[in-house]
Each structure stands twice: as structure tokens, then as C-alpha cells.
Amino acid sequence: MSVESHVQELRRKHQSLSNAIEAAHRSPGTDDLTIARMKKEKLRLKEEITRLSH
Image (cartoon, rainbow, N blue to C red; front, side):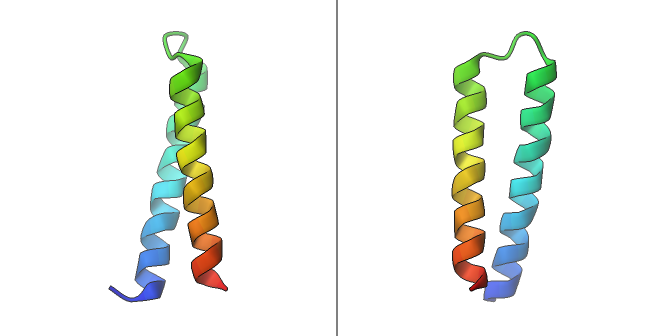
């Protein structure tokens, strides 16, 4: 897998997590810990994307 294709896959995962976080905020049954974990993973992906892009 090339670096570029890896970055594209990370971006897809990042966008998917963004969508999941938005949906979780709208859902009254989602606990704060679950949302916090998703946000932490989203940040980790963003940092990896940034690291690989430079």
C-alpha cells in the first residue's frame, strides 16, 4: 500500500468517525464516554494523516 492510498484510507476513517460522532450527539442513548473515545480516535487519525502528509 502506498503512502498516498494509506492517507486516503485514514481520511475515509476520519470522515466516518465524524459522521458517527454527529449521530451519537443526536442520539439520547449514547453515553459521554463512548463519544469521548470516538473523538480521541478521530484526533489520532488526524495526527497520523498530518504526519504522513508532510
